[in-house]
Length: 383
Image (cartoon, rainbow, N blue to C red; front, side, top):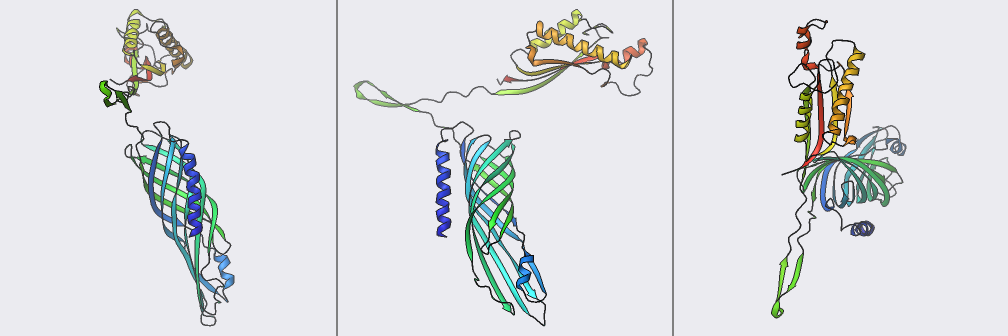
C-alpha cells in the first residue's frame, strides 16, 4: 500500500506541474472531476494452470469483474486534456478440480487489481453536444493474488503474493454534454497488467460515467480608488461585454431560368434579361451584412435537346449569374463558384410532361426544370 501511495504522489506531482503552467488559459480551459462504473474482462491462462494439476482436470473461469474509476483533470483547450485518477478493475479467478476418484483435489486462484493512472486525452468535438476522444497514459497497478488447494494438489509456495508495477494503458470513448457543466461518457479501455506470479496480460474495462466541469470564467476585477480626505472606496469594474454571437445560416434561392415574367434569361439563351438583373440585385440586397463562407450557383435545364448541349447551357448560365453577383453586387470572387447540372435533376415528375419534341405545350410543362439555384452558407451577427 505504501508503494501505491508513493506512486500516487509521483503521478500527482507530474500532473500538477503540467497543469499549473497552463492554468491561465482560454475560455475552453477548465478543471473537471468524474467517475465511471462498468465491467472488466480478463483472459485466464488455463494452459498454464493445467500442468500444475495431477491427472485430468477441469477448470472453470471467472473472467469478468465489477470495475470503477474516479478521475480529475484539466482541459487546456477543445482538443487536449491531462487526466489522473484511481481505478479498481475488480476480482478475477478460477476453480480447478482433478478427476475423481483416483486423484481428488482442487486448486483455486483469485486476483484483485487496483491502481493509479495519468493520461493524455485528445478530444474531437462533433458539434455542440457530442465529442469523441482517445487516451494514452501510464498506470501503476497493484495485483493481489490468493491461492488455495485441497487433496492431492500441492499447496502453492506463496498463497498470497502481491506485486506493484508500472505499465501503459489506452482507450477510446464518446462524450455527450447535457450542459456547460455536466456530461456523460462511454468508454473502452485497456490496462496492461503484471500479476504477482510473473504473468503479463491485458484487462479490458467497459464503463459509463459522468464528468463535472468547473466554470473558469473569472469575476470582474476590483479597482482601488482614493477619494478626498483619504477615504478609500472599492469600485467593481464590470467585465467587458461578450462579443456578439454569430448565427450560421443556409439559404437556397431558386430563380426561373426562362418561360416566366421574372425569368433570368430568354429561352435557350444565356444573356441576362433586365428582369433577371433586378431579381439578382434584390437577392444581393437581402444578403448584405452577412459573412459569406461559400456561395454555389448551379444551372439546370430540361430534357429537351442533347445532354452535352444541356450541360453546356446550364454551366454557361451559372457562370453568367456568378459573374453578375461578383461585379455588380460586390460579392467576393473567392467565395462563389458555379457549376452546371444539365438535365440530371428535374423538378417535374416522370410521366408528368409527355413527348420529346420541343412543342409549346412541352416547353411550358418543363419550365420548372429550367432554373438557376443559389446556395448560400454564411454567418451573421445575432441581434
